Amino acid sequence: MTAGALDGVVVADFSRVLAGPYATMLMADLGAEVIKVERPGSGDDTRAWGPPWHQEQATYFASVNRNKRSLTLDLQSPDGLTAARQLVARADVLVENFKPGTFDRLGLGYDHLRAQHPGLIYCAITGFGRSVAAEQLPGYDLLVQAVGGLMSMTGSRSDEPVKVGVALVDVITGLHATVGILAALAHRSSTGVGQRVEVNLLSSLLSGMVNQSAGFAAAGFVPGIMGNRHPSIAPYESFPTRDQPFVIAVGNDRQFRACASVLGHPEWADDSRFEKNPLRVQHREALYELMCAALRERGCNEWTTALSEVGIPCGPINDLAGAFALAERLGLTPIVDTEGVPTVAHPITLDATPATYRRRPPKLGEADEEWLAALLQSDGRS
Image 1 (tube, rainbow, N blue to C red):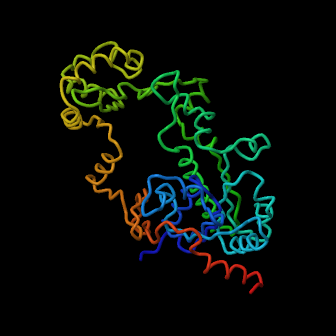
Image 2: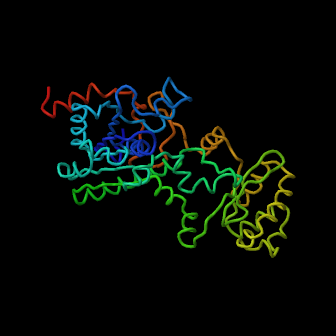
Image 3: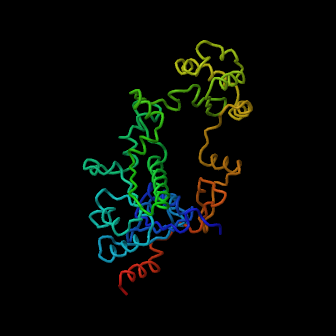
């Protein structure tokens, strides 16, 4: 098997649910040895988050835990803590997303560990940071989407803000955690010194809202709900056709001229209301009505073909079955087999050190027999 980019890196993964496990799975796919520490008896909460199920395992758990080994430790017991400390002694990276202060009280906080393990990279994932006020707020994705402003601009009506259809804040935070850990590994490779890496859901969301956050930070602009529209570009939204809705994403004036021509109205491009993007944004309602009238004359597939031929980004609003079918048609191989468990492919392609799919998502405690005895023995116990 081809060597992974992170071969030889050992990750002690004390994280649960989504943000942390997503980060550690990405590293595991790239070759890291990830030991997932779970509560005895029940394990990670997501083991019970179903349906849907695959072979009696929650697909939620499977989505972020392939290529890992599961080790059950009771961190409230002396033996459990001892084994945890010995695991950390073997690790290059520790990842945890407990409530701030929890690992400090257990003697597993960064300040406790860095003297003994100066090369350790310690990644803490929290909901809102480590301040006293932040400790009172539970770090749930839905809560952060609400208080972090994302729901205030998501939905179709101002009286009914809605969340994004997946736990997007957790995913963004997991990606940020991965970037931080890789940066720390690069720093350690040249200095031999580890460091603390901290990410939190709120900061990750504020960064991940990019242009919307920048509009407030630089101009004090507070966006509202716009449905499928874009605050700065038009036409850039969903439209009806004769049979089903689809989206058009016109990004510049040249594209708009081509779009207007395909729709049978080249004169729109010279209309004083529409000739430049800021004008189209200003007059988006009038433009929308004109485009709807034209688009209802033909079906979605016809329009998608005609517009795509002149370089206009457009396409149907797929469900997941349609999305995976599209990826298959494009040769992206979106689903991979991991020891009999279908999982979604790693999104990064590396030609020299590609992601690998070595182990199915682990059964709870399947590494206990191998690891517990070794960890306790290394502490001088038999």
